Amino acid sequence: MNASARLKAALAACPLIAILRGLRPDEALPVGEALAGSGFKLIEVPLNSPQPLLSIEALAKALPQVIVGAGTVLEARQVRDVHAAGGALVVAPDFNPEVVQEAVRLEMICLPGVLTATEAFAALACGATGLKLFPAEMIPPAAVKALRAVLPNEVLLLPVGGIGTANLASYRAAGANGFGIGSALYRPGTGTAELKRNALDFVAACAGSMRA
Image 1 (cartoon, helix red, strand yellow):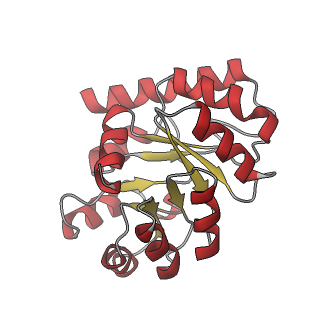
Image 2 (cartoon, rainbow, N blue to C red):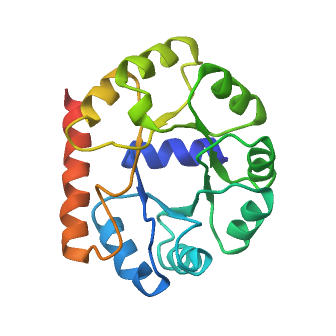
Image 3 (cartoon, rainbow, N blue to C red):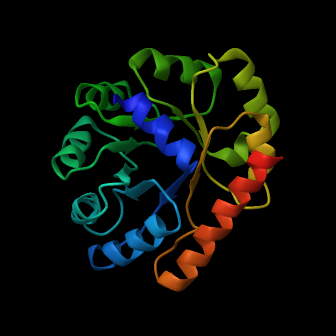
């Protein structure tokens, strides 16, 4: 499968990306196993976490059923580092054409951060697999609906930032395909039992939004 098909399949199974900012390599496996056991198919370790490439490598090896990669990817060389560690996912807070093009070259899933229609179309022209709408606090459901009206139907939109179980359904109704979930799911020090409860709450909220 190509990057787009892999992302669509993962989001169809569970439309959530776990953002594990601050994850340490010694925590990676129990945290990853708790998320995978809760149904998550996408895991992101931001590159401003402690030794992120070690965590990505460990997760990618242990959880072949999950798409693992990095967040806060700002430079093309970082894309290569993530790929070398076994990562298949590149997420950025911004749109950097060099980052997107390098991810495309390496056949990785790439989700650049965009805020406007101009950025969205530019990122898609570079080959972005989908679009991270960031920060979602500045892109309410009404804005997502407006973007959805002008973007091609097949474009995947994933709001990130401030997404919780309470507002997820309204974004879904506006046309969001999935979500990146950060501190509401995991923050440094979160135990696996708490993490699993949080993860299952989000999975249940997604299921409810799809039924609605």
